[in-house]
Image 1 (cartoon, rainbow, N blue to C red):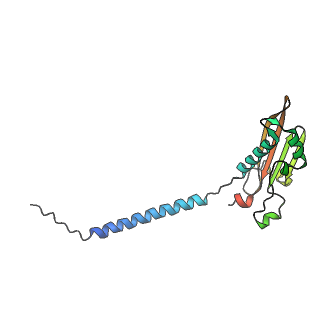
Image 2 (cartoon, rainbow, N blue to C red; image 1 turned 120 degrees about the vertical axis):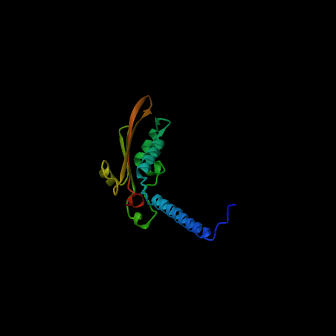
Image 3 (cartoon, helix red, strand yellow; image 1 turned 45 degrees about the horizontal axis):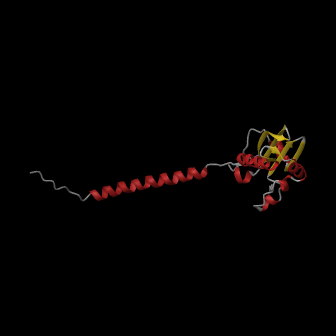
Length: 165
């Protein structure tokens, strides 16, 4: 008969060492995953500029037809005509700045501008790290029975909030 009596005194100590090593591996994996996730720079200025141009298009056109009355109102003050807020007052240092946005609309032979015109000089730059990001949208809308070209250029600064790095 074979004696199956095994000395089991060291089993728990060896097993607890493996559990401890496994715990360290899992903890390091979780911490590194969180650090990688939160260290990624997320710049949403181009998306924000696109959304801003969509809001202007929705304001100045109705179902693909140019709203001439709204265009005339926007020519006087685009911000109030389209219910836009172009000045960021979330922090004290932003209150001193003119605007965080720029909008230029060319439609039906009219030129409408709102926001900080200085941002237009940065459009077309290769680097977008610490300068405003521009977005341009061209479309056609109906004015009566004829198509009218509408070109909207938007620029979003918000460097401090979005382009850290």
